[in-house]
Length: 200
Image 1 (cartoon, rainbow, N blue to C red):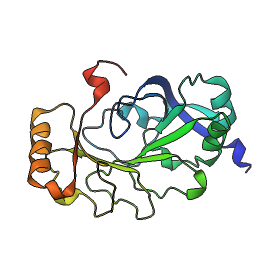
Image 2 (cartoon, rainbow, N blue to C red):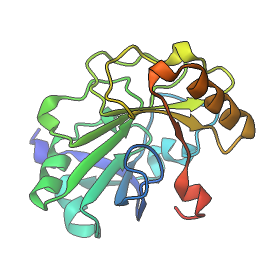
Image 3 (cartoon, helix red, strand yellow):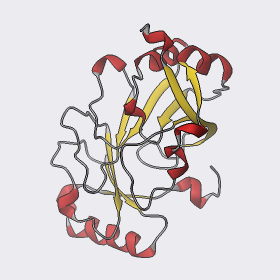
């Protein structure tokens, strides 16, 4: 099969700001693909699980038909690493776009995809693939989360986030306590800025 003929299940495309993590507050266009290999109870994008709701598009169709005003493009899901993103990233790079991905880290990300920024959000009970490079780590602080949930990877300072679960005060307090109890881990508190601002 010609790689340029690969079809991607696009569930939605929207322009907003980066609401979480290291690049929080920056403008971005989001490409959300359908399908996921996990089922987290607190997932706020479970509507992306249903492949029947997606529009199947080639990389060329995506870049030709979808308005992407920002330089920064975030490919998210669902779980985008279920698909060969190489051709899509290549087409976006041809348009001068900076391509980021948000993944659960269960699949390796080939170097040849040439993704510019990789956000990995390891999920409870799933295996963080050793071959999955991460530029930042984002952990949702749910009831089961502990300091031992954080993978032992050498990350630059300021790139491990404890993400508040669905705005829950208990989650925020737990993250706050962990950051102050383990200063040597160089953790950061994460919020969902887009929800604070009531935007997408």
